Length: 243
Image (cartoon, rainbow, N blue to C red; front, side, top):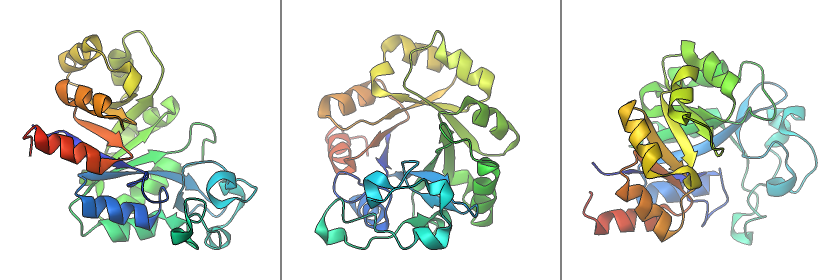
């Protein structure tokens, strides 16, 4: 089985993360899916941005939660990456789903609710995915263990994100109700893979950019990898004749 190549925040090594140029490039390169991050605005609009604040990508003070979507649309989140991306706007989840719906791409939405536990974020995102008929193509992931529990009532694949070593992580994930585990590449070991297969739990690995890391995930036959450089991973997969 070929391993899924998921473009982490789009093709984020070559275009500003979580923006339409990064997503479009990932699609053109042939990625199997796209990973993106969702926060909630002051007026409860899901928007695609990684950080809780605007400081890094918009070079502006303030938290996402304190701005309305109309206000956020005026910020440039592209020029920090390069002058070619001047005036690239923050995308709403709705606009992103309109873009991805006709394309043969899977979707991994990370709910950014581990630091700010946005009220009803899971349900707002789920309803929007349902509206666009994208439930079956989507995984909702989060570092927030309580959020995983809340999503047990939703008919969608969920993934527990983690970078921490924990005794019997596979068993813990299943107890929370997670369908899959998305682990940092440093947690990937033969023992972990053996445990996950025994419990029939799929594993995806983030953020895998180096050749050695990518090949390790391929050799362990993980379900997928999240990478900033999908073109490199696709090339390596092709050389292994896993197409």
